Length: 213
Image (tube, rainbow, N blue to C red; front, side):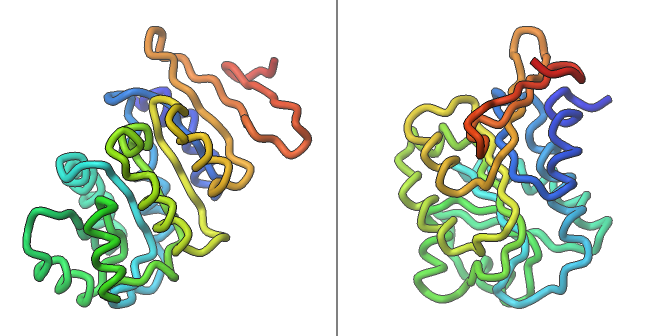
């Protein structure tokens, strides 16, 4: 059975909408973005060093966990997933990029290193995911995340998942997500509320359990 955040977000993410998913660790966010990511990229053409999907994670442990979830889904569509993080020699990561990686799961620091070395280009990215954005902020990674997002095409789909909008995460949302829909998980009851915090007309609508208020 799907988690509430998965049931709530999938109609919007599969339709190509920008989405902000708010929920703590364990709420099911990884599958919530992995399913639309591989589905939307299923028809893309593989290009050396030019991934079509990008997932940013704050730590190598989380990046590894995300990759473990993504790989069987990606394999069903014939997509390749590569993980990029620091603390290890980059030669293996270079080879994987040159061989063609459809989706890159990366920590910002090593990704920026490879970008500076011109070993990866983000100009073909169609879908970008930022996971645990508040943890990124805690670790001081938001300036790097901003530079990375600026290197992706402005018209691509973007999904951001965070427990809170504190510590400048809201500025990231306002700058890089286009007309996003927010799906927030209530940690005590598992309920999901859906709203757009930045609607064009300034009037926010909140949807709860199929109705509006």
